[in-house]
Image (cartoon, rainbow, N blue to C red; front, side):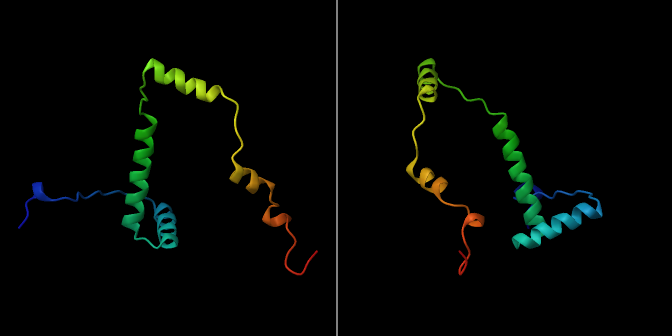
Length: 99
């Protein structure tokens, strides 16, 4: 038998209004996930976002100067983006059989 110190998973309990549960359940079903998996994934993603926002980026003075220099250069077109932006949007294209 495993003792509590050996357990890998920890329980987490929350009290939520029925309306919140209904929204969570609906979204979880749309994703084909259980409520637990959906809530765990959403909570971990939100936590990672908060942690990433608080991260400091450190670099040398030379690295920062190179970074600023790169940002100061004129932009260059990306051929794939130019191609996509030159296409008509789906709602602007004629439908099959229409002109």
